[in-house]
Length: 206
Image 1 (cartoon, one colour):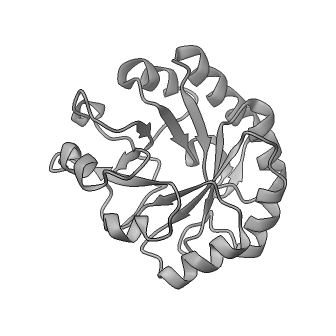
Image 2 (cartoon, helix red, strand yellow):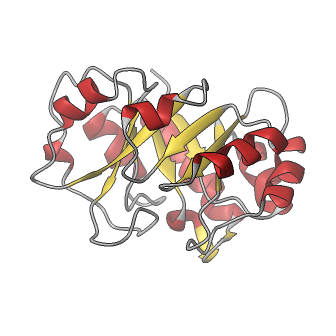
């Protein structure tokens, strides 16, 4: 099975083109002001309009007010929503859009319960647990904490980069991998060479 690749934290048109040209399956746009990869609604709308066909647009939210999410959806044609905070299943489903739920994994995380609680989610994005930081930390978690037979597609995130994504795909066999800081030249600024390396190594490994 060919693994899918999401490049998250896109803020610039040239990074969008670099990711699409390298074969990205999805691009993530961060609607969280505390993130260095945050984009405004207006900027995101312009970026999403530039996407070629068959590349998904994913909007990332962290404990956002429902009115804000609605304002984004009114302006930006997102294909998929990604909830990265403490949202409940009802919070995630209220917009009537396909969504994935991010889970920050630690030894105390019950991923089977998460899969049951978020039964309507299209998948679970598994990231590292770092206190006080909802994501994008560049930290890797212990992949052995993922139980076999998890009844949801796994999007593996957390500390992935060109030098370890092949190992991640071979060991975890995720549905998709997600990267942000691992393909950056600086926070919010992607490196086209790293993007191309990451996608090529992920696809070959699968």
